[in-house]
Image (cartoon, rainbow, N blue to C red; front, side, top):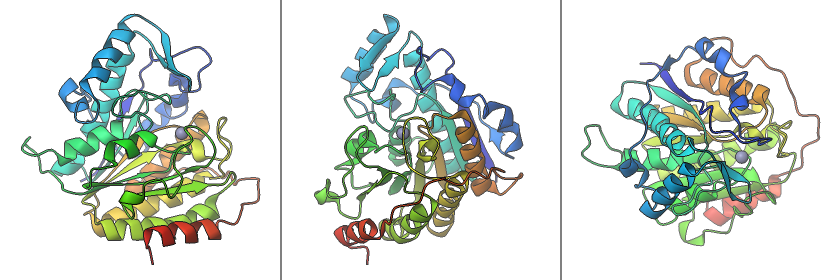
Length: 340
Ligand SMILES: [Zn+2]
């Protein structure tokens, strides 16, 4: 069994001077054949598949708004064009192609390289450059019964995008089949993700709000001291990773401090946890990341973690800033959740 991927570029989902653009893939696309992974054919998700996460009212209204042509639909700003509705269906479909390949055993693991991204999209609201919540749609699909492939009962979503995945958290707030862990920069968009904000879901919804410049060493400790107990205690049968590469220190819109080596460490840790706890079933789903070089290097790191083939990300880009001490934060988060 091998690693598979989908690539959904959505070239017409584009808006003047917007960071979430097809050019994010400019340095990634030429490298896709070098990652030792097989490309999947992608079909659009159906409206019923989207409706496992999003309210039919939102789906209908987005379809109508897109028909009217380019528009800004929130202050992030989130934009749509005439093709955005179909592009978002294809992005969700590209994610489903990956998760289904892993669940059926056709592939060992997978990476959905898709846009528009998804983790800010809430059940009744598209926001934060996101239309439909791709990772959440894949999770609900995997939980669905009787559709010709084995279902799973427990899924963990780990989100290392620099922003809090408010949408994913909102979808699964009261769904005990899915656990959600997010590392994100505190104090930036969308403003959610404080570690005490979901007290009804201790151990299951875990937020790690980071200071700016938190880098490879901080993330290494978080991977060991928070990711590990989170997965060990929840016991998922599938791990979905919301992989955003905007946590790189040189991202133009955030200021966390990861390097490419840090993304490799995080991705490898999650692959190792999947090997240990879920028979290796892990699906990475692209979220943000607004520097094309960081996106290509970060994706290379994920593929190297998934299949160990090729030369790896082959990038040396250590962060220039000193890291803050995150010991107190880690202790607070561990103690709030009872990770002892
Ligand atoms: Zn982000």
